[in-house]
Length: 341
Ligand code: UDP
Image (cartoon, rainbow, N blue to C red; front, side, top):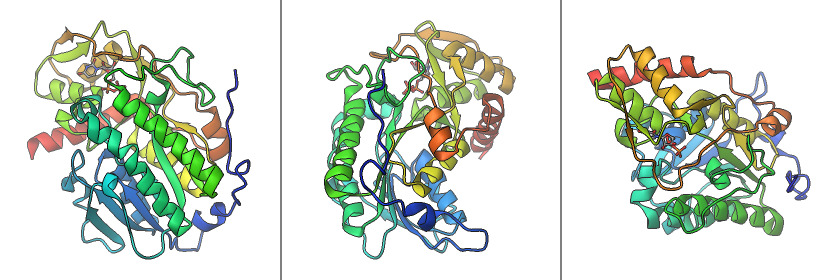
């Protein structure tokens, strides 16, 4: 069942951004980009990539789940500025802005479950503040949504046309429904105010800078394996996820900024693994002697998750290139060096 997928063209938004954002061979990118949540895991890698291709970046983060350490290499770099602020309290940035990317939100389940009201605030008032900033400046707005909008999916793999299966009052709803509301708000600004909008639905992403205590499965397993602790598999470990390496995800985000596509667009790696299989891989790749133990499955934990990325391939020419072994090796190296220092 196709439940509708629109592009900027159907919203009547002119296709100007391919020319405005794409780097020509001999041209310098002179764009100025605001990244909310820019000191987080994905945000900090995105800021780096934007700076590398010549953009000016205004990074906004309240450091509630992000950290200054993530942007340490950028602080003091020409073209990069950091504002410590909670975007749900409003947002104003002076000067020209070409694009606003709204990534601010707790993103790991334990992090948003610990901050239910803040998560709802940043995914509602925060999204409105970010999108109205884009509207005032005539900037492109990219909403970082999530695979969680599909909830515990009844369709597999998940295409963007699937409307999802979310428990609207369950514990995870603070994140899921905030992101669903953000998508609705984004589309309404696109339709009503003609803001140039794009929505990406980000699936599980991993890589350097995931925090050991973050609570996500890759960071938990890698830090547990490296410190010789048991790997904590929740439930029987048969639930599946699809893991996208951070560099691939960032290249998808940049492709979305450069396009005139409104989406939503799934960004993720379609290779699907059970959580038990991931635990075995991490043990093997780290050479750890850790055992695997089971713990209770969290409430509303989705049983299967895997993106259909055919829309991203078709409209953005994007697909991930890093397989799980290669990505885990780089991630493990990073965790090792962090533990040493
Ligand atoms: N998980 C696990 N052990 C952990 C952390 C997570 O088995 O130490 C499971 C979790 O129950 C879920 C999957 O791994 O089924 C992915 O969890 P994560 O928190 O990384 O993200 P989610 O996809 O649930 O948002």
